[in-house]
Length: 319
Ligand code: ATP
Image (cartoon, rainbow, N blue to C red; front, side, top):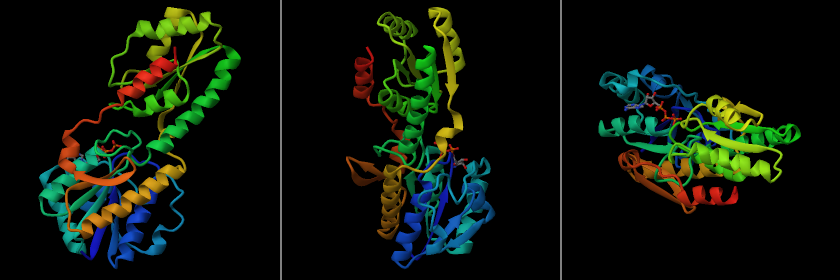
């Protein structure tokens, strides 16, 4: 394989740039040409493609976002859209494609692989909701952004003796809420994977108040419900002064942590290795600190499970 393409797709995640850099440098190291495809699958269909050199990826390892931009494309989900994409890949002589993104992006990679274009997926999403890898690129940075925000909120929560509900990202996945809640000693953590008992949330708040606690933090994943609704219900049920903070898109940006930079570098380089070995339709991942690869179709059909030991630990530590 002499010419490969790379694109980022779906929601951006800190560390995607470090992964792009690793792919480009590793491929050039092996005497391959690398083509950057801008704006995800939309840009692929439109031929928004430029060759990347060693210098094209200089000074980006520390930057959040993605220099290749990202887009969501409905057209690419159609047969006609995928044919257009293949025409462009042929035009540029691109023989293999590396796709950095989440499960939606991997669906696209499977379609292209089925049409004869070898694709390798690199898990890049802050949600950490992909099976076959212990961590996705961007999760650690987003987690630390949340922790930093909650630490700051805690100062004002203590000063005013308030209860705070912090709504974090995670429509279907509770990892960000769970890890942040555990790291910040939240009184309750509400995640989509586990039904919660509102009375228990209230019980804990009241018990804490009886013990003389000055503030309480509740971390809520957005997939469970709206922070504002939970905040009003708590205020009604307890009479405690309750405030709500929705962290929103701040969680997707910022300088990637050291962990995410190293993870992205390792996964990006591994993706190039797989193309060189003639593999297709695989996703690279990390399990027990070892690089692994799995069939993408298998990844897409198995559900990411939340770590119930961690859920139980968080419950035990927040008595
Ligand atoms: P995130 O986890 O951050 O949302 P994602 O990769 O899951 O990232 P999606 O918006 O679901 O993000 O998917 C990104 C793009 O992948 C879509 O806009 C579309 O172009 C392509 N895609 C998604 N599903 C399919 C599919 N079934 N077939 C072909 N392409 C798809």
